Length: 302
Image 1 (cartoon, rainbow, N blue to C red):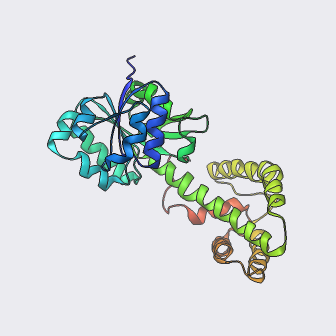
Image 2: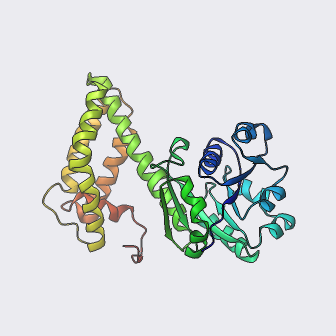
Image 3: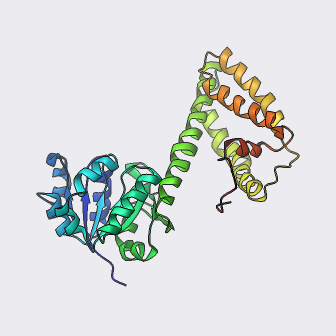
């Protein structure tokens, strides 16, 4: 199987710079282009070739990675006949932020122009790129992923091909980063605010959360919730929706008494109340999934 070692990177922001550095560290011949050329200078000193134009960057490599602000910006750079002709037969890896619908539209465009296309999402900060913590998820044809794998694995050891459906990586990105990561961090910081208000040392809070609550309670609960969803059975004898709702009322009261913003517990309480009103108050708390999930027949993802 042929593995390309020539790669061009379009977009040298904080993340793009990290990607380029990881590719250079991986021993690849790297060409870069950025609208503001001065941002390329540190990478040029490290061995990257600064292309004069996007066509020059594309011509230099078999794998083209784009990491710009959004799809609109990407489209403005690539969707013209001169660039499309040069991209034909090459691998284009899209690492810009977007939605599953935008990924599908980009994939159709790529197919029309004989471009081997992968959709990727980055689930870490720039500092993690190229390390054992580097998580990048890719969707698209497996054979395309395999051809580019030598390049892609330079970006992070936790590189995953999540499926051939081009929208899968974007959907996972929204679920993991936009929902879970942001939501979990917001909840954790809400707790930190309560600790500050009530005199609990923040390092004590962190120690208990990481050393006890996360491994003993939260991680097993996540696994149990997915199992309950797959079975369609939310029966349980540990803590029902109504028990959680009663507990959240105290959480909300303490937040208000501590002069901490109460929007997070208010929204959580509303979600539990709606789930209970739908007849699931005596079910395990994982039953709130039934309030959140899209209405209609279940998809084959569960």
